[in-house]
Length: 117
Image (tube, rainbow, N blue to C red; front, top):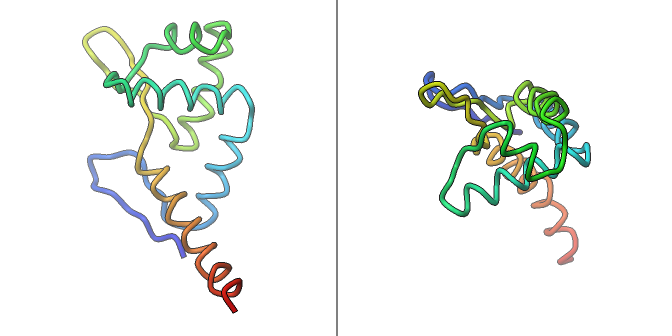
């Protein structure tokens, strides 16, 4: 039942349940999950975006490996690159996580109702 869309300015668009499956598959790899956690921590600290080098350092991966994993996450629309002068910064695509949250709520709502019977 996921029907989440965003403005044309934004590249993160989740329109159907199949999109949620691809988001979850991309996030399932342990290194990619660590990258997502680092980007979330950075966002919570007020530094929404990090360079690939910063990400690689924080998750203890080579820059090449971090870049490859960030590419998978970007393809799944979990992260996006933001250009800041001559730097290419990586940040979470919050809209995709909101779509996952909406899907979980849709999925667990009937379960919660059945448990109360």
